[in-house]
Image (cartoon, rainbow, N blue to C red):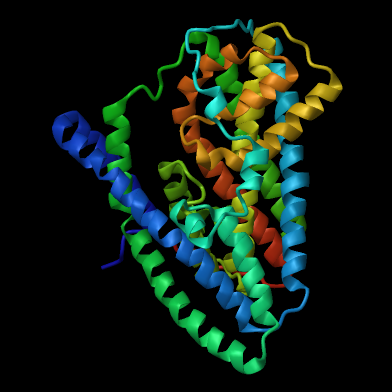
Length: 407
């Protein structure tokens, strides 16, 4: 009997959760409580997966200069592609907002501005007081930084020492990949729990009429980036179609979207990339992908930038060209801290609004959109990171021309 593709299993789980919520709301409420358990399972394998696999790649062979080159390509993607995408979203949003009457609404003022971290705080905490603090707090940026330093030093060790290190990290790398496969197989249960909690909590589509232009602008900008810009970049640079990779990674993209955190879905994405997507260079899924996942949150950047522009126009503030550049760059860089404030994406805008002289109170009404668009932005973030690594793999000559397709 042919096995049902995992993507369809997850779709069936989502429908089953809806039926359960409609027929047995109490059962759906209890199922929703299991959501945290699946999130903990994803978080449990995240840090050891990144550390062990990156160290395995570093000790596998002496690739002088390769990792520095890959890191530079990741940084180029973060600065160039993400900035371009956000700038385009500003242009489109401005056109959309001009065709609607945008009015301020202060009914949803959000408190707690001084408690939020900005991008500078995020970078500062990349160097922790000790390694165990980084592991306990799931600080992926710190783990990647420490692993890169240890991996570089390991590559400089004598051949005998590197052989022992390679044997150690290779064995545990295989073990942690089995854990990632188990997590992927449990994804339908996770989807059922996530959907049950979402339906029980409600309020996902609790939007008022004033938010119509904002919702349209965000939706158009995200769709343009995900289904036009990214496929064009992959087609031009990697000489291959992006949508066949969308079929391969549909299940892992759904995990990122449903969990509302693109970082948590990274281990299963890396696992499928090395086994099904035709990526033969192990440095891409086990070094490049974690680096991209830490840096690039393009979907979140677009959402934040459109939200800031909407707030400015709601108060009749016309930004100059230089202020627009500041807005774009600020949203690109502060999006890196988005996973530290789940479900409150617009909270990250407070430092930007304050710098541009836009009333912070105006962002309150947009917080009702955070829950819904956190799903969408997490999926777009993961899709963007995946396309970035497909492009990098092709540039390194580590992409097979015919990947398999096992969703």
